[in-house]
Length: 198
Image 1 (cartoon, rainbow, N blue to C red):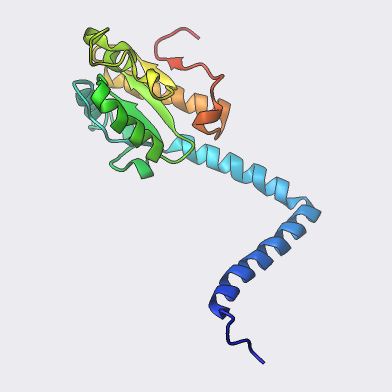
Image 2 (image 1 turned 180 degrees about the horizontal axis):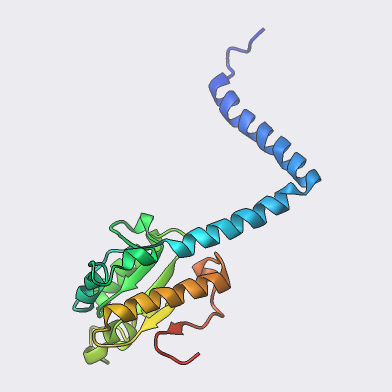
């Protein structure tokens, strides 16, 4: 006889998922397929992540014009897999392209925290790297790396679209090297500088 107090819809969904998950986990572990699938899936996600860099479409100041120029047909960053997205929840690269004021630091950190892992940051231009002409100003941060970790620096005032595309290429090489490590676990990694001799 059925228990009238039992919620069978909840039992069916949760208990079934737990049963199927436990059963398949034991079967895969005994056949050692689980390790093979995890390595294969890890390599696939690493390949997919570096071949399609979804960059947050955020224009702060004059370097935003160069960012926009990298997407026009003359430079065509999309052929390299750089796709600009308007939502931080669909992006994995934060491209900071202007000075960060102390008032704007909190929104930049909020955008960074909304992005899913693994995520990367590119500092484009002198303002984003060191404050630029506003260096040691009362309201401009001395680089975005004071609030979020930076993976690639692109110097210039403003840097050319070719330098930005080269920065994405160096970020791709870094992704190959570090894999899909989360941004909090990459403290020992040195940032890459565009134009620096290897």
